[in-house]
Image (cartoon, rainbow, N blue to C red):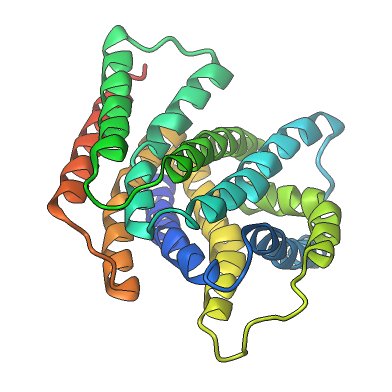
Length: 287
């Protein structure tokens, strides 16, 4: 199997894993506070990442890499998990997944900023149109919505896009799984201390499905998904494999309906399709 095919397969596996993140987070926040959930998932994943780095005798990154690793940590280890957990206290997983349609665009914009590319004007046309569709959907939904939840989701998308772009750039030099592992280890002392400080006095019953949600976001969303995702970006190319993110809203909506019994109405599908179309157009004219 050639590098490109391997990259697309790894990228698809990463997208499938990430598609379960918001439904799993929605399940977990039923019993865990957002701050504890964020710090606990990062701590669990960080400990596993440290074991992997030690087991494979990985060399420490160069000093010049630590600032970029800090950006990855702030974006995908702390920022996105915390903001989405807070958002899901106010909105449903199905509603939040529509915002994921903006993630490829966010990643592309930060890729442009970091790489110094100059997209054609049509790129910005699709960018503004996609943003307007998402804003309109959030404002005019008939179902109970929350401006706070929507703003938190927008912040999460910005943070994640930055973390994806920075991590993809680093993965070319450090390796795919090594990037997320070092980012997790870098944030581990802070996350461990915070998780102990904010640990609830009474944890949920062991039979609670919230533990399954915590396990999923810790093992799969925080570590295993990134192993496949960054490897896919490194082997298949950021621009090509990155387009697989366009499938994530569809997978996420189906999971939210199947696992949580949430209503997925026609407006959500229409908004998601429109956003995906805009992002696809923006990606086509990104160079």
